[in-house]
Image (cartoon, rainbow, N blue to C red; front, side, top):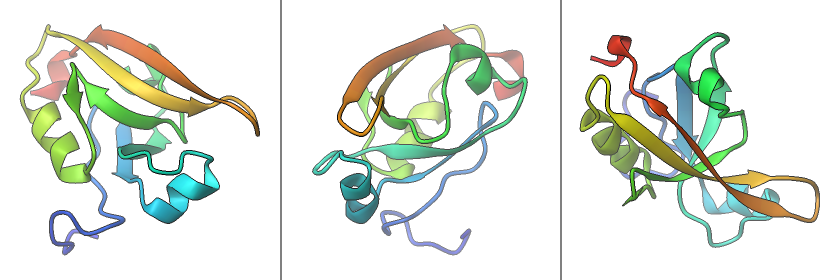
Length: 116
């Protein structure tokens, strides 16, 4: 999908932290019981990666990084590009608990050296 224009629904971001994300489309949000929610959905978490270590899982919807709102893959890339090795980072995540509930979860860690 490298040819996507920024802001195009369904856009994905490059792998970072052992994490691949894609834009949360309105249809995907509706199916997940998160209608009206904006963010990026975790589509892949690599084993033994920073993302797995801090507890991110496939299907999580990242809505903030260090209090920066994340609504698009472009905003995700910009927010991640500002992070520096050794910096504390907090992800605000919407996580589907079961068919009825969506939880707000905060996962945090220290930006690893391989980020730079």
